Length: 120
Image 1 (cartoon, one colour):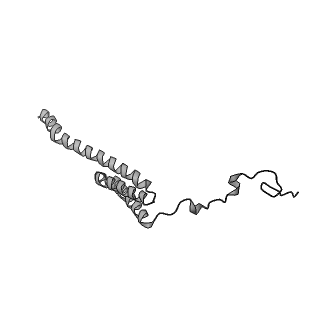
Image 2 (tube, rainbow, N blue to C red):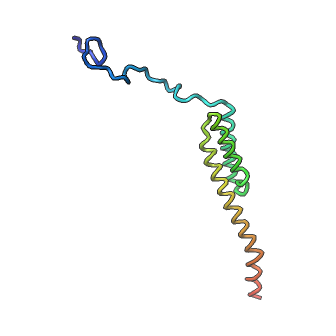
């Protein structure tokens, strides 16, 4: 018997586990690249999400569009997680901004004149 005999060599009484009999799968086969149209939709969702956050009042419009683009990109096989997250954040920030603007307008129209009237 040779010194380099290992598992699975002829004459070796040890059984070979099933995992050792299969060939390893190359990393390229784990995921296939997304088509260029799907990647383009994912990038659009990302850009719209960022714009919706930066220009916060527009997040009410751009956020749902980013969510829609991210869903279409994921259906086509691209990873659009960043676009989806930024779309939700843009929608939330846009809603908070609209609420803040609305409350400020109510304050300026209703509360401030009464407050200033009490001082005169």
